Length: 460
Image 1 (cartoon, rainbow, N blue to C red):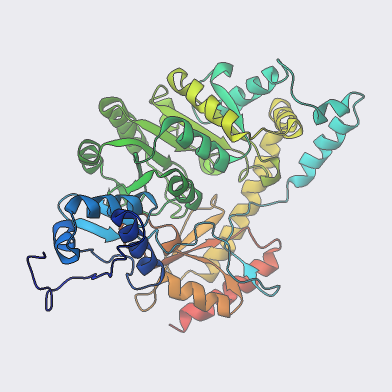
Image 2 (image 1 turned 180 degrees about the horizontal axis):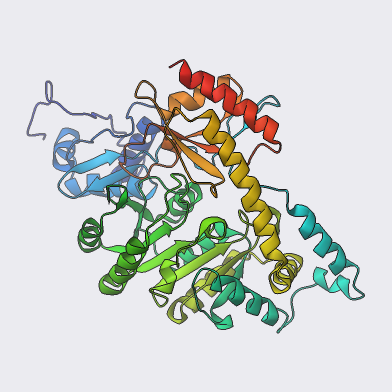
């Protein structure tokens, strides 16, 4: 029987439990999930202590613990030692970042689409390839040895990040998202914890939820990673790894300092954790050496070509230390995701010929021009991101939240993405939105979108 009457007891959640639908912990987990998704429990809500909830429902504490665990692995809850269990900001996020509505009149400044002006150079190389006498080989399965020189090209490409590696370390993946999925599937298990930025890449969130891996926000102090806090988190929350975008972090546009990179590399060695370094945006802005260059034996480096070169290539290079290679390779095999021979060959030729540098030059130049226009329109507001970023992080006035501004912008014909979509765990989302400045195909369309956004901001 319950110890307390609970009639006037201050509990944030007093669920009704269906005791006739299988195991009680699953019934409680189902009730909790439905109350979160129905909006009865909002993100940030602190749930009752497990013993009090168990007393209220007249069930064992272990039953509550198991139910909470089920929901935690789904990304619905976040638990903090000494603080309690909260409804996660992941719970109601549209993880795929696809608008629920469609309209031909919407200016898309949501999806992180890169500049496309250099695509004609890729097309010229592709035409040369397809005019060769044995071009039909690109439509076969790769044979042993077919990728040898392509891996040599990848090694050359990675030298631009200050990373000295070898062909045996190189793996090809069909895009950065698939690379992340293979790494998580191969090296982590359900229930493992990975540290990430408080606002992080949305596809990292969705993959983690599917695999039952928990993302834990890394504390920042003065806009930099708090290494002491991260050491505490590693020890007390048993972090297995850290996922980090070192250059032009998605979504906040932040670039890590050289000191941060060295400190994180040192921590990984001391705490015996793995770093997953996402270098997707490094080719556009990365003047600093990668974290992997400081801790190559502890870092998997992901070099996706989608944002710097062209998304249609669907190609990412991974540099994987020897002790992790087999498990990641097995995960890739089980995922059954192969790279198109055409994409791999085309990219290798671009690198070997040096033409990739011209592609980067054009993309950097056009992206810088768009950023100058953004700065001109939004000069009165805190819109973060440098000239090499293909998106910006717009901090909003205190009178409106990111979610409210996303809805307001949509009603006026512009798609942007609120900070809530990227928030991790119990992180309170910034009052901010992400603007993808290269998504509109024409600069004139981007300018129309910026004009609408400025008018909305001026009216707040």
